[in-house]
Amino acid sequence: MRYAYYPGCSLTATAKEYDTSTRALCARLGITLEEIPDWTCCGASAVEPVSQLLTHVLPARNLALAEGLDENEGVLIPCSACYLNHLRVEMEDAPVPERKRRVNTVLAEEDLVYDGDHPVVVHLLEVLGRPEILETLTTETTSPLNGLRIAPYYGCQILRPFARFDDPEIPTSMEPILRAVGAEIHPWRLGNACCGASLMTTHKEVALHNVGRILHSAQGADAVVTVCPMCQLNLEGFQKNALHRFPDDEPLPILYLPQLIGLALGLTPGEVQLNKNLHAGEFVHGLAGLVPEKQPEADAVS
Image 1 (tube, rainbow, N blue to C red):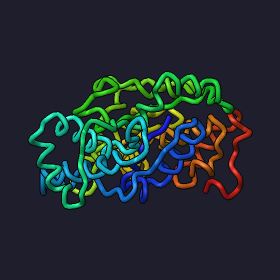
Image 2: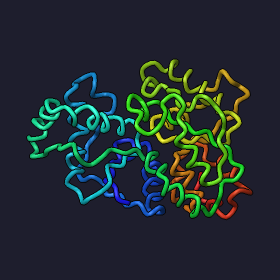
Image 3: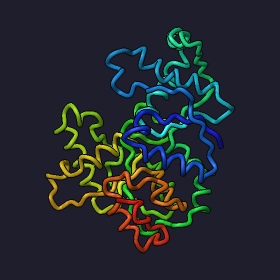
């Protein structure tokens, strides 16, 4: 299994642990990742109000570069916002000749062409949910997370507006992956709720309200697991302020999915960079008795 790999800006800065754990887990699963050379920012959510054309050209440039790589099954993207922007090109531009012509007119400045026939944009969650990967997870788990209750948190961008691999109202695609490594699912209804995303910098009270209700609903879980860098940042970094309306609630570890799955498959806390998480200490303490052989070295987790 081989994919072109687009890490995006977050995974090279605030979410390096997501990048590191994704690469380590894919290597453990036999998935080859080839990073797209000279990739650029996809525009995130900041470019769209400035230029609709640039919103499409930036991710199309990355896809054009990916088309020049060795044969692969698609472009694997862990960040939900990056995934959405690149998938938009595939869903809205590729089928419409006039849109594709406008994009390629800009790309011609670099002698690039976005063909649109190949490759296919896929999210990390979509790949981990493939039947053959689930089977591998079941057979290769060395530290089953038996008894660990996990709240799967999808956020809103991964399935809206393009619900290609799951139900945007009642998403469940993370559940078989977690169950394959022995974890239990925390029952809740806010796994697809918006955390406020960049509203944390423009309308902070609105974002804190969203984060607070999500974390309150997740109480009783041992950890929240997500696949979105913005969601992880908001839920973890603003947890103290967001829970002020719920004084009895406890802070929760907010982990990336490949970090948790990697631990179950024998990767160490250092290899999935749990030291980058703010509440990793509490999480590792919760693992005691479940996966004792995977307790971190003294300097692996702060």
